[in-house]
Length: 93
Image (cartoon, rainbow, N blue to C red):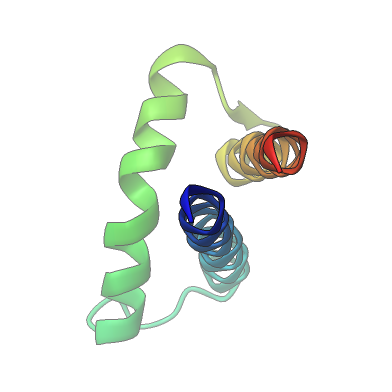
């Protein structure tokens, strides 16, 4: 019974990480076309991604050649967490 609970929480956690990774990708792609900043979807994406970008920018200089690499660094970090937790949860089961 505990195993099923752990698997359920692990599955939800990994799904949230995957969903957030797609939010970052969509936000990065939208930044190239300069959408209307008053659009509610654009505002939501900004509110979801900007705190994570600001956290990364505090420790790592992310602008290289005029391009902000914070989304790429964040995607690599999320990918690392996904692989780490998948292996961790699969070894528990």
